Structures are given as structure tokens and as C-alpha cells.
Image 1: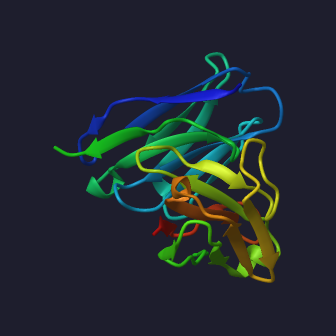
Image 2: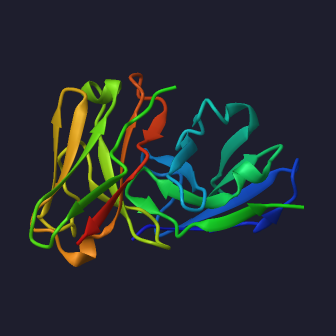
Image 3: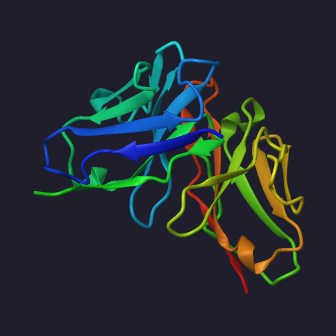
Length: 114
Length: 108
């Protein structure tokens, strides 16, 4: 059974870079043909797709966030990561990682505040 | 930017049928997926590729598609089905994911 777990700082200062890691267990991140995605959800609001990385390392990003987002694979650690630069309070949200659409992490709250 | 439109809320009594719609121009070309999300929990996939049901999802959940509108149907609604439901699809090229705004299903 594939399991995903997000980790990273719960508090980030405005203008800094938000960095999160998703650790995958129960399967290799480099095997098969899967998209590994990041999705976020501000409190009381809907889901927003941030972007995804394919098993090959190719990426697609939400056009509204593209200039600030980097998603990458670390196959040696069986992880993939999210970096979101120049954050503001509007980036405060629960951040989820997911494999395709069927396996999701539990989510991690990131608050942007000084 | 591409958008998927859902009604903000749907209310039904236990045992009745709930229907939640999702509209978007590219839905005639791209599959739709439906998620159930309960408070404090991660979303759970309940329908994939318009009408397929993942293992472990009750048969009362079904999906259908017609043109640029897809519908999630919950037959014989139970109290435990009260949750937020999100549709998800992709732009016409299949490159970018998009989520609908979500529909709160209330069981009266």
C-alpha cells in the first residue's frame, strides 16, 4: 500500500521560500509511470492544483503559480519536493502531496506570517 | 484560465438521491474525477474517468457525463455521505489540472 507523508516548516516568513517534502513509502517513486502532484487548500476554501512531476522528471505547473514554483524528484530518498518562492499570506494553506489521483498524504499546514 | 463550475451546496434527506453537477468546456474531451472530503481529512477519490468507481467505494456513488457537464450521483444518501465534493479534470490539452469550487452535500 503506497503511503505519502508531507513534511516541512509550518511557519514561513513573507517573501521567503516555502519548502516541503513528500516521502513515499510502499513503492518506488521511480518505478511505473506516475504523476506526483502538489495540491493546496486554504482554510475554508477549495482545492488548488499547484503542479506535478512525472516519473521521468518532467514537470507541469499551474499557470497562476508557475513563476514561483519548482517541483522535483529525489529518487535516492524516494521523495519529491515543492518550493514556492516569494510567499505571502495568500499562500497560507494545507498542502497535500499525491500520487496521481488515488493516493494522498494527510496534508500539512503552512502559515505565512512574520 | 480554465474553470469548472459546481453548485455551492446540495441538500437531501436520508435515503434520497443527491446529484452534483460540474460544468466545463473541456469536459467533452477530458475525463472527470470526483473527490469526497470530510472535515480535517484529505480528499478521497470516489469516481474516476467519469463513471468508474474505485475499489472500496460504495455502489451508491456513480458518475455520468453528457457533453460539457458531468454529474456525481449518490443514491440512497446516508448521514455519513455529508461532506464536500470536488470535481477535477484537465484543460483541453490535458496538461493542467483544475478543480471545481466544491459542493457541500448536506444530509437533512
